[in-house]
Length: 330
Picture 1 (cartoon, rainbow, N blue to C red):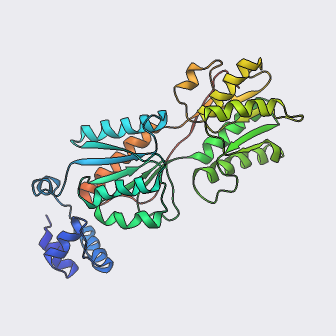
Picture 2 (picture 1 turned 135 degrees about the vertical axis):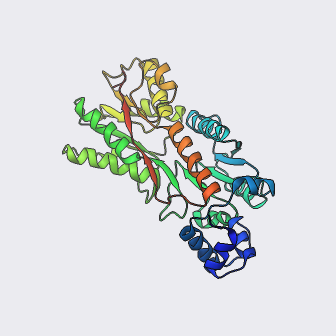
Picture 3 (picture 1 turned 180 degrees about the vertical axis):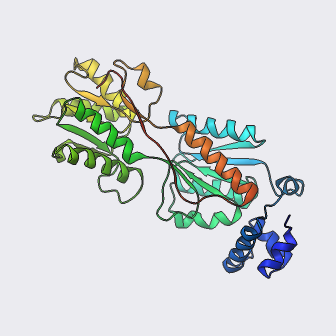
């Protein structure tokens, strides 16, 4: 079994330098860090987490950063992280960023100050170039996020396939005039880009044109959904179905439809995204895309623990499959 001395000899560096790399400390050049990691890989050397814990180098705590702990999706994701970490002997520190970049950066400092061994982040507010330097202090796993050419593991949901399946379902129900909600129409990366491509793909395959008037941008909340329902029903040429991209938006639309005497799905079919609890509570019940928050949380936790114990983990994005839940609203 290889030792830290074997790693030092293979890398041609001192035991102190190897130790600094293992413990994500400063004062190591990127060149030397790469030499140590390569030597560890060649020798199949894995630091002993129990010994590191005794030396005070592991807190046995994982941080998870979410924008809002009350959001059902992030609540489910956080619960999965906490339970999975607990089963492995780790505690979970839950951090709410509230979409604030400065607040988020403070949470990353938990790595630098050794208050957390690693961090799972479920909604990245800062640019990656501002976050990347923190990775030398401990592993970071992106969950439900995406960045170009990631240098950290990414756990995400197949947004393109999920949206494609949703639009295709509406088409199979006989709809040709389909409205679509998106966070950003011309997104160059991330969730909105993938969803937009899924929408375009399904429409193109069916030979259906996209009416710009039926694209609704920057809609996120239940209140947005209420206003959108009124707007759609007042349109002279309106869609017969709307893919909302959010259970909250869809719930708002259905609530407003019930108040205005609009029949769902007879007058307007409505589709959500996320399969939050409200999807089953509202009347009519909501057809939606299952977004596996618990699966994301479990996988992200397994990956970050692998990084902590072995300094080894695949950097390729791990993409969870999509699933459509058909109910009464379509």
